Image (tube, rainbow, N blue to C red; front, top):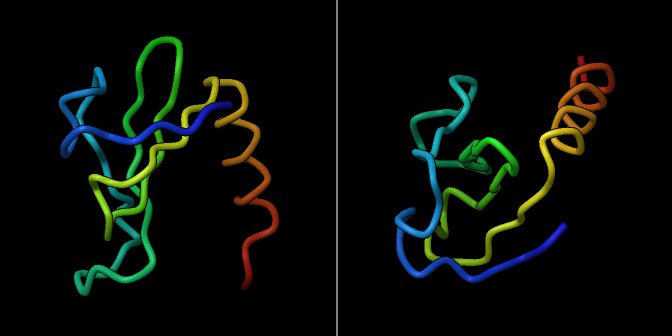
Length: 73
């Protein structure tokens, strides 16, 4: 896992940034994800030029599976 400072709103990463369809239109507490073949980049949607967390696809899949099974209901 690594954290890097993005130079701009996405040109330093291979893929387009995507925000969940569950995110509200008010820009609340959301993350954006850019998926590449060998890594997944995650950033705060409110600070697109801020730090970017980079993880392996396997780590991202584990996180998503955990979040899906432990989400508040």
